[in-house]
Image (tube, rainbow, N blue to C red):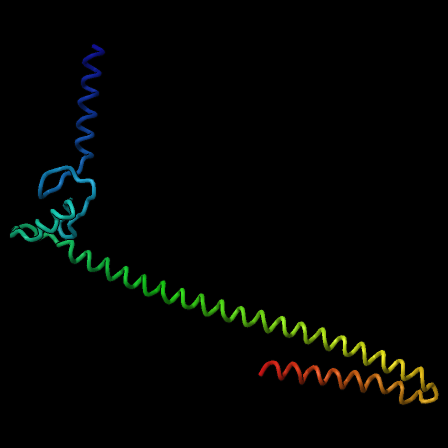
Amino acid sequence: MAESEKSSENSSLKKNEKKNVILCLHCKKKVVNVVKCKKCNNSFHPACLEQAGELKNTNCMHESSKVRRESVNMLLCEESTELDLLRTLVKELQSKNRIAEENSQLLREKVHFLEDRVDYLNKKVQHENTKHPSDSVTSNEEPRKIHNAVANNEIVILENLKC
């Protein structure tokens, strides 16, 4: 009894395997790389679809894979063009980023220079104030004038950098 059950299981497995195997409609052989006809949805080998498309069949003229290849080539061409454009954009953005980084560094250096200059001028004013204590009114106004002049100079320099 066990043997008959095993043989019936084996035969049902073979039937299931045969059902899962895809056969080419044109040559009736097993198909690994399946190409389906867009019109009748039958399975073919790629070369068999071309051959079947050339036959005079009353049911279906099977769309040739040449049309499919042309559309794939067109799609690849479009993707290639898009990739080229994206690469060009990336290069341009990298270039602009480098320029922005260089400008940022130049501005940092300029700010550092101006801060040093303000410190120097403040020290100079303090030194001048200690030299002439009798001139207290002008000595109090002098640091403000120097600071304003430096601040205005900084704005002018920064505006020149923008140009």
